Amino acid sequence: MKLSFAKPGLPRTGIVVVGVFATRDLCPSGVKLNKSLDGALSRAMRASRFMGNKGQTLSIVAPAGSRLDRVILIGLGKVSDITELEMQNLGGKIYSDTHRAVKGVVAITVDPVSGSKLNTAQVAAHLAFGARLRSYRFDKYKTKQKESEKSSLKSMAFHCGAFLNARSIFRTLDRVADGIFFTRDLVSEPPNVLYPETLAKQAKTLEKLGVKVEILGETQMRRLGMGALLGVGQGSIRSSKLVVMQWNGKPKKRGQKSKDNSPLAFVGKGVTFDTGGISIKPSAGMEDMKWDMGGSGVVIGLMKALAGRNAKVNVVGIVGLVENMPGGNAQRPGDIVTSMSGQTIEVLNTDAEGRLVLADALWYTKERFKPRIMVNLATLTGAIIVSLGDKYAGLFSNNDVLSERLMKAGEEVNELLWRLPLSSEYDKLINSDAADMKNIGGRGAGSITAAQFLQRFVDKTPWAHLDIAGVTWSKSNAPTVPKGGTGFGVRLLERLVSSHYEEK
Image 1 (cartoon, rainbow, N blue to C red):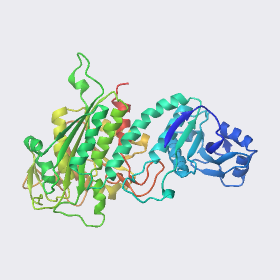
Image 2 (cartoon, rainbow, N blue to C red):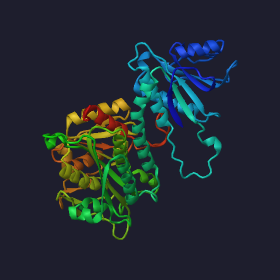
Image 3 (cartoon, rainbow, N blue to C red):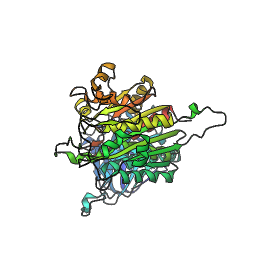
């Protein structure tokens, strides 16, 4: 599908979409179109329950006296409803309502709105962004699709006065969409195709955008003392990897202190398939564990988005990639491993493996890069789904400023976070009689004790842990997120970076 921006005008063929405010007030383009159609739009509204409320639609098929295939009236609601998110949602709705159009040509008219916080260029760009996000499909393995199941949408044009500005705004949003789609692709791949080696190769493709990518193998990690990460993958025939991605969009200036130019760090859990290991999971639903690498997918997608739009910031992305399988050499419940930090861990449950991977990845990141902030993402616990369902991701942090920035960024892009507590009382629950700590803390507060475990590997670095187990995959469609891999986290972190850490 081609997305474009053009001068104001009313196409004579294809599908035309015009906005209507609450109380059935047509936008100026709609008024002109209604007049050319001898009042057909007004009559259609009067004969229906369409009021122009936010998100409402009304289709007039093949209106008499024209060569148009269809006119779609779309409700804008009140002027106060014209926000970035609402325009993205409308764009997604327009796409879902038109993607099987016979001729595949859609035009959307965007008129100036008095009193709106967004100008026409911003409205058009965010409508297009929403349409692009909703257009995602993962169907590369389908060989017998019916034509009726495929999208036939060839082009979607947004007609507005400031179309050149709209094009410029969308260019940046489009690069963010590239990162989101990359994450969705990675999360959707089957585990026989995506495993540590091949996921590392996918990260390596970012070099085309100027990202420096290093791939550490097991020998290198063993020399670094990463016993926690390596223990998780030792039962699999697939070798574990640690991928280091660096985007240096803000070169150090002469005389600048190193601390002032230190990078932001994002760390992702990349368990490409999680059987649970010897503590094996029930078979029902285990196929979903292909997306237990969701945290790493978000970090890789974020790096693609930032590099794609040439972000003026230094960022490092670290992902620990393993496959957690039972086998003759698999890690056993009761094993004690030594992490890169030197701290020892008693492994009581091999299905609490993500925190072991992150323990070494976080310590490595802290020690090598000394970042300004460090944020990790992981599909870490089922307990977070019990707590928050699929509406919020869990947020844990040792820094109030970072937490507030993350939560605000989440609200702005509709990737919501809910902060949960950390305290010494919860930390005591993972003390071990046999080692420095154990990898589970009992049935209660499972997400919190997992976060307490991670906190032991960050020292004083401003840090946040996002538990995205409930939001990485969706079983239903949303306006800008088709069911399947959501890409949750890419927009959130891109907004965090652009709002608070990027050089303007």
